[in-house]
Image 1 (cartoon, rainbow, N blue to C red):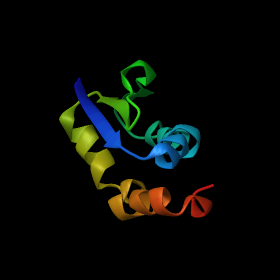
Image 2 (cartoon, rainbow, N blue to C red):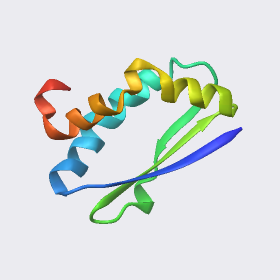
Image 3 (cartoon, rainbow, N blue to C red):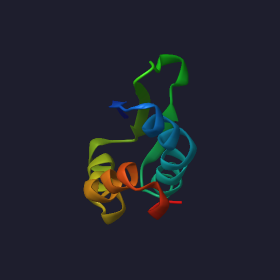
Length: 88
């Protein structure tokens, strides 16, 4: 099993967007990936300017396949932060 801790630093609007739209959207796609175990938002670890996420896959190979797929495109995810309307 491989666990990745992710921390996103955001302003108030970005944090609200991640919690309401981005996290559920990414989780829905991620759940379909081979080797997926969990994708959690650790709310109790959040600060005023960040969200803490934990990604768990069964092994590094399947995690890397998630990283490499089109749906995980970093530019697309970045665009979601910039322009919420396209992702809703």
